[in-house]
Length: 201
Image (cartoon, rainbow, N blue to C red; front, top):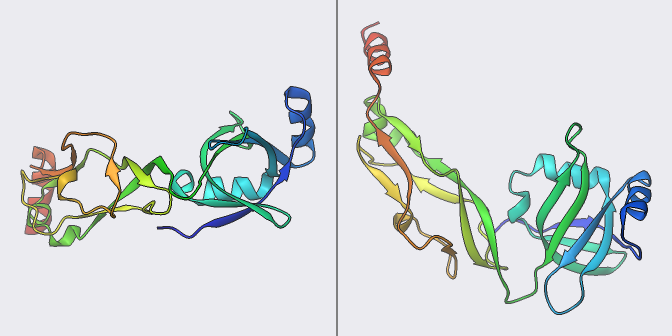
């Protein structure tokens, strides 16, 4: 599980376009925290810090955050960010409460490892990636940072299905069938010719 990040936050008392624009002029991004028994909570977070997390963390939407209201904290999971169409500056951010014992649905990136240990890839086969992210249902305290797929031993024509991937306890894919994550396919004629020329050269 990835390390929890801290994000300064403050409460907002007014919603709507006017107050939201005023929040942005102050260098902050308006947001909402949903989920759990309490009512949705209107918040504001520093625009620069939020943008840094959005742009610098490819696992932003599967990372737990602790909102710090000057001593009072609230654990949340990012759900959706509205971005400016030109500048990519965040305009609004939605979080969901990450209460203990809750389950959440997140997309987790797939990391492919040990390509040199795949005989099929060594012989010029092509790694055909079907899914770069997988949607998982997870206990909120067991969100994996990534899914590792080991390519060791894969021959041309072999494929890796979700059933062959070890997931943390309590974590399961949201798709019930045994779907394909990747496979090793034969090289195209052009790729095979290039590989033969490189071997001969």
